[in-house]
Length: 137
Image (cartoon, rainbow, N blue to C red; front, side, top):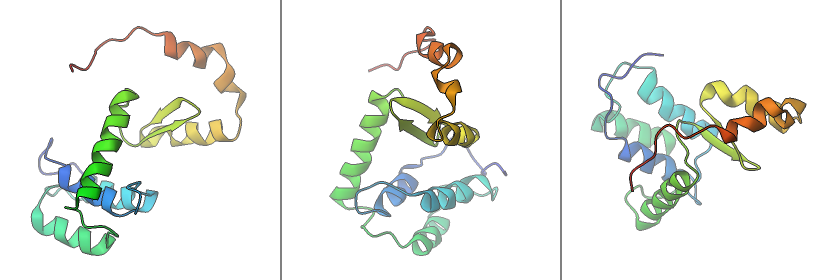
């Protein structure tokens, strides 16, 4: 990991690129990893236009990143994430369970393999914790 030259930065172009790489606006692991490396492994500006052009050429999106279809898919994905109270990336929702962050991928794998811990009181009580902060509408 190497921090980008500035953070936060406007990530809209990267989000549109990720969305444009799939006909249905659902970026795959390969695309997400390329974008994460672009931001978190170079020490350079994540939103630099020249770097973004190179990344776009490398990923060869199936859709035009500026198309209404891509913009609508990204808006739909964003609205869905907000409705699910998601935070952190990557986020996965399986059977109503939320797994987020690269460090949670082993937990997601264990859940998918049927680990009984996910039926335990310890896991189930998490949903009953009080909310510490709310998004403003």
